[in-house]
Length: 156
Length: 124
Ligand SMILES: [Mg+2]
Image (cartoon, rainbow over all chains, first blue to last red; front, side, top):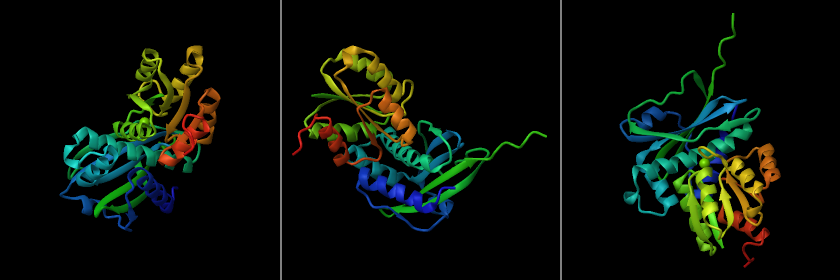
């Protein structure tokens, strides 16, 4: 179990030191509702080893572009789609790396993968949500979800 | 001094490059361990390498071991800048020959502190 407070602390420290942006947990879990109808990015870093699961970050394309603009020190409109996806992938990598020591045993991180679109669902097959925190940054929604793969059924 | 920044994230390369050039370093970059080793082999002016752990192909830990196997690179300082925060892995990297270890997220001040400690930047 990863406590929500721990996720909030990790995310706030990354946003402060890397982006210099404030981000607050706003107590909402209605992610589908908040992101519905909006162009969205989802970044995923898998964990394998003692813990099997993933760290997922969902946010609006507008916020992703704003954050990568800070990282690249480039105006948002001048960034390529790849730049924006890369930046969100690296932020997710940092969250996953700092969540990892809170989990039992030793696990490895995958390289980040990022998808972008409108009204899609991102599913890590065979997993359940372990923790989920809704945030607001620059007036835009962002969600962090930790999922854990369900143990395979014991052989009969 | 010339610094080689190895990270698979372009955004992270941009951040580290900016900090290092502000500190007066000439910066070259690579996106993975293999490319990093090639850069190091091509350019004998590189005195410092900042390397991520989690990279496609050859990872940062393997790069540290490869650099330390070659006596030609004895003088090259190696700093790991990574999200790998498990204590056991930090010790593995230091045992393999990394000179310093910086955990992501980092601030410019934390990085500067390590550079001063290694004598690569004078305390201002
Ligand atoms: Mg990386």
